[in-house]
Each structure stands twice: as structure tokens, then as C-alpha cells.
Length: 225
Picture 1 (cartoon, rainbow, N blue to C red):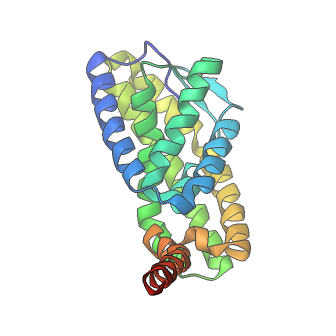
Picture 2 (tube, rainbow, N blue to C red):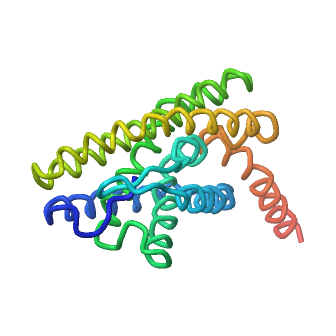
């Protein structure tokens, strides 16, 4: 999934950087306080899962767990996956710094889209159905990321078109594996902590109500005193 430094045309790098900044800004604005621990966990999950990779031309084949990140985090998947990509580029030279924006968009945007498409259905389903939908979200995210990687390479020159085709077909087995792992993860979350699969506005409302009630009570006691 990661594209290496030097493989893309400057205009593709600039476009990817602009889109990544926009996604990061929106993701940080939509980050609820109660989702910060989950954001860290999923960022670490992506970091570890994608370190085990097989180079394929100017890219690589590996799990990324982006569909799960999209289901749990929504737009916050952008900063979560960006941090993982940045640490990999700095400490392991995996991907690269000049392609960081493009890699972030290629991986995080499909995660967000998977969340938008499947999250509502997952949150309303029983654990078994949620697992099936979660598996579909995981496979969908990998498929779309592969398409975006292929497009990024194709836009950088005709010489990369064969590599773009190779990247897509090499990821078909990964789509299946990612779907199965995502399904198992969603099933476990649905059984143990289903609130993680609810939209942020619903979860935040339930989480923040006790704190708001406490503040109101404290204010009433202060005025009476």
C-alpha cells in the first residue's frame, strides 16, 4: 500500500499533500475526547500490521486494518493513520516523507468512506450481522486503497501503468484476509464494547451527560452557598 519516495510526479505529491492536510484538519476537529484512547490503539494496530509487508514494484502488500479504523473512528481515522505512516517513514524508512500526503490519502480516505457507508448499519445490527458488515468494510477499504494507489502511479507516468495493475491484483488475497480479520474484530467489539461502533455524536452524548449533570449540580450548590 505504501508508495516509496521518488515514484510519483510532483503534481501528484502536491495534490496528495493538500488533500491530506484537509483530511487531517477535519479529522482533528471531529475527534471526541472519549475516542482518544481508541484512536491511539488503532493507530498502533495499523503501525504494527503494516510493518509485515512484501514489496511489489514501487509499492508493497500488507494488512492495514483501515476499514476497522473507519468504523470506529470515522474522520478521525485520518490523524490516526497519518501518525502511523509518519512513524514508519521516520524510524523504518517505510514509504517516505515526500509521499506521506499521498499515502495518507490513499489509506485514510477509504477508511473514512468505509465508516460512512457501513458504520450506521453495523451499530444497529446484532454481533453476527455486524461482523459480516465489518468484514465487507475491511475488504472494501483495501480494494479502494488499491485503486487509489494504482491511480497515483498511473498519473505519474505511463511507465508505472504495469506496476499499477500488478499492485491491484497482488492485493486481492489481502482483501480476503483483511475482511476476515476485520469481521472477527467487529464481532468482538460488538460483544464487549458496542459503544465503540456508534457514531461519535451518540457516543459523546452518552459519555458527557454525567459530567454535564455534575457541573450543573456544582453550580447550583455554589449559588445556594
